[in-house]
Length: 460
Image (cartoon, rainbow, N blue to C red; front, side, top):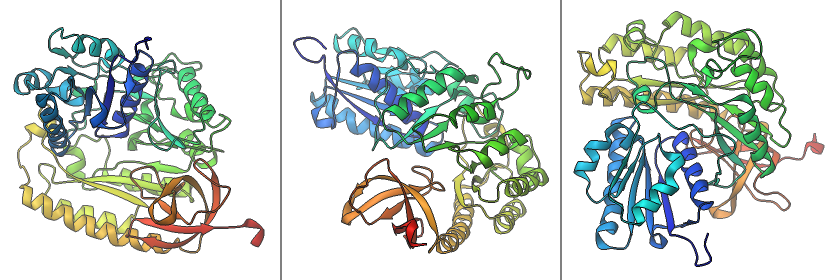
């Protein structure tokens, strides 16, 4: 920062998944060290950066609407520059540049590390820019500056980027490129940095987390094989952390080593986030999931047997091309017979460039919506019963901070941030964000969240 003050103030609006949020935090860190001020609101900003998502249709619509909302400020002169970053320009950059003249710069996922120079050029009026390298995403390391968002007790840590799988519904390989792992020492160094900053929970993210290490030079035998268990064991020893959570476990990548560390880790949580997507043989084959319905059922039984205390989460897709009434009923029955602790449901989005886009037998939108509603209703009933069954139980809760109505917000080990609900606590003196405290579950709120009170182990 010069003696005359910051170059400009920058406001970020991040959309989409936690991986996008992490990219935003790295861009914020880069700008903060290169003479830019970070604005807390759009009203205080000279530059607005919208980090977009284009994974499915609804995400694109949200991103476009956010761009148009801010573009009005750009046109009125309140903003000096409008920048659109992330997956949307990476996928549709040239097209967007033609249709959105209000935007000064489009930054794809390949150029996050150069965001300071890009803004320098934009503010100097050196022409409109399109910064996209097709098929490539920049993967930051532990030396990249980063500004944490949120309360600070929890953070995401990206261990890899891109994906080599061929799932028929997914455009990620086209957007984010080939799979690339971060080095072991870099991941461990960032975990240690986060712990030193007061972070107590790290959530490991990637497009394909369980493939981590397959592209790295092995320190032992196993060249070309994933080494996610090795990474988890390293993180399990990082002092200062309380919880290490692995997200996005691909069903065909579960081995005994992974189950062992999930079952017995000191800090690694027994949280198994394993997207199955469907349960009908026909659909799994059309989706190119590389597994069968019987193998998926056996896998769930194997996980439950190896880790009886595990929290299991999955996701399902309804309305994929070729999904018949019989296929959907198979999925419904599987959901009844094989309940998970948490489940996310998506309606299929027909994405250009994917194998699913080329398939016939499209499911009408209204029918897909009806199936979505039937499945989510069943899952809501299951979740309500499961949460009611937790009332009276004792667990540790990670405090995140105060919320309205005289409550503290916290989460249990079974509640991943932003997707599994939260636990509301009555506040008490001496505890704050980042503390791990014993609580007794006292009730359910809204069919999704829990309420709890402080528990004194000495009372047992």
